[in-house]
Image 1 (cartoon, helix red, strand yellow):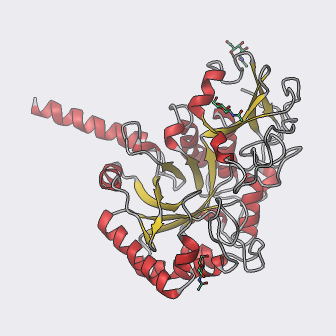
Image 2: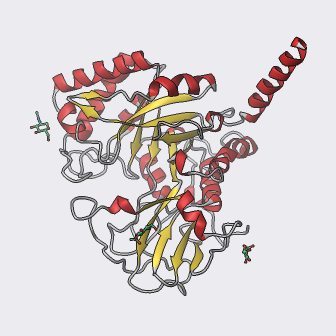
Image 3: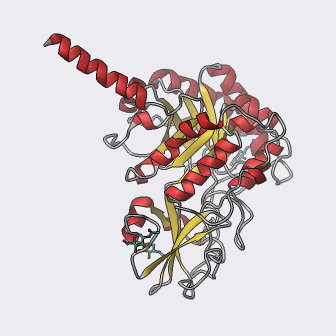
Length: 405
Ligand SMILES: *[C@@H]1O[C@H](CO)[C@@H](O)[C@H](O)[C@H]1NC(C)=O
Ligand SMILES: *[C@@H]1O[C@H](CO)[C@@H](O)[C@H](O)[C@H]1NC(C)=O
Ligand SMILES: *[C@@H]1O[C@H](CO)[C@@H](O)[C@H](O)[C@H]1NC(C)=O
């Protein structure tokens, strides 16, 4: 009886170990997590949890109570936990805390204490964005990026090499003192373990037209920013290819176009949007259009490639993203699905990037995260980098042509 129990237990342990291909090959699957309820969280499917968010209050990052439960549960599954500080709307504390030496010292000491007290594996700084305007009324200054580097160096010295420091970043390098993307961010590469590219929220109601939330590359309209642009520009500015993690959304953005898009070609996902051009800042709640995957699937048949009328599903073969339009109400939703996510994983593997990140795990119904988890098997098949130090050529890694399901 006792023997049976033991071997049954061993069986459980072995099957958990075998299932845990995620992370075994060094590729990361980083998941942001916002909830206090961990019942749906499968730690074995992520290498790192970025718990969101801590905000800076009186110069000190807050310590969410959830960490007390989250950290031991994650560690029991061999998954690391970072505390993400900031976020859209949570960045008021950065500029005033980092722009003077007393503020920097206070932040560094408080962050070290927070790490020691909670046992977290590190911090993820989600400053949206150093040196440029972020959420409505958030202070910023042209000296932000310079001060950011100073504080990061002090933090690294204080917490040591074993703990992690990462950042969630825009698709362009941090703005320098001229108010433009920095040409050389190699000093940041020395203090960060990696960066998480927020290669989403790129087109939305803050612009003039509908367009893809997370395009692989720029499409026929919309902004220049994309996954490939972000990887290219950060790498060009000195971020090593194996320190870049590509962000993927488990959500879309919904808008309403001023005319029907139901007969548009898949690549023509750019029509004037009702109430558009609200700006990121004070003229409208652009991010209220965020629509989680679980709110999108009611519009789709089980195969996810055909929409339930009056919705119509299209796939943009340039930006490699699906979109939905309602043929009666002209609502438009750009989003990611298992197909577009698989292509993003392929791109990351092909480019020898460090891994994939997602915002946000609780938006999944269990269909999306397994697609990101395929990174381990795909990376094993891909093998060691064949590109050498300089040969990473995005054009050879970008999928083209029709999608075959
Ligand atoms: C630091 O930033 C805050 C907020 O923008 C500003 O009020 C303050 O004057 C700045 N201090 C310095 C020393 O630049
Ligand atoms: C987005 O979707 C929500 C929920 O279906 C809806 O209430 C809202 O009106 C939509 N917004 C736009 C801009 O279409
Ligand atoms: C997906 O399912 C729908 C509904 O069953 C069907 O009409 C459609 O042909 C399927 N699409 C593909 C690509 O198999």
